[in-house]
Image (cartoon, helix red, strand yellow):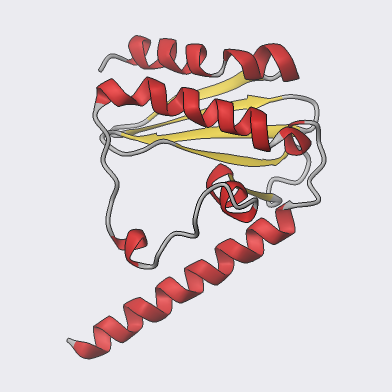
Length: 152
């Protein structure tokens, strides 16, 4: 896929974010096999992360406190929209065909607009719960890895 085609898909997928919540694209960074696209408004930064062949994901955080961030995925889990990922899922990469990419990004934008309005407007009250959930999951993954290494 060409860079221009990817950028067209991103612009199309996140047009409502830019129109409704006054986000502007502040950076697009291409590396060998990945890309990040940053959007900001006065309070919130949204970062689209994509690795070739994988599933894109969104990070959401405060503009003025970059360490205060989480992901759309953890937001959806916290709100009961998506189930908690199993530990096994952390060790199996999710692949995606290029043809599915634009629809996946449109879906993420729709989920963000439906479930993340408070974050988009600068209300970050839920972020500590999302961060705690992510830390607990990461710790459980580390424990699982350690127990697997002991078995070998």
